[in-house]
Image (cartoon, rainbow, N blue to C red; front, side, top):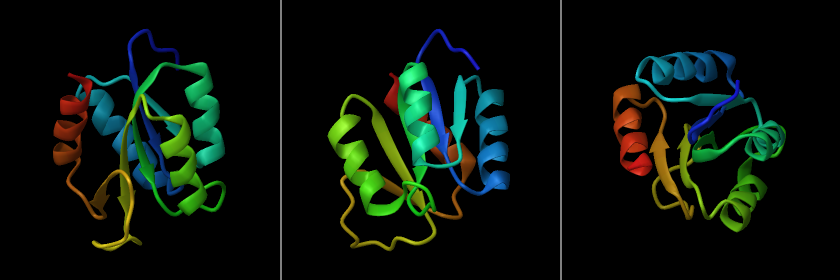
Length: 116
């Protein structure tokens, strides 16, 4: 996918979540890119203008603490929203965390706020 404006990047290793969230956000009018892990996400960010990263915390390839460190160090110009069924409140993450399962409409509102 090629986008002219800023895109939302969904980084999620579970195919069903990644693809249904992509479809939902596209129907809401967002330009959406997808990746199944942190490595694929880096490729998308190098190839496209990404404004918002919605990413799972726990992924087999470049996920978890190292992915968070990468995002914190190299993506300060982007809004990063972490989604997780693994993390619990009180776990220190430098980004907003939305806990799974979450409401897609609520996430859409948060993305719209970030894109303003």
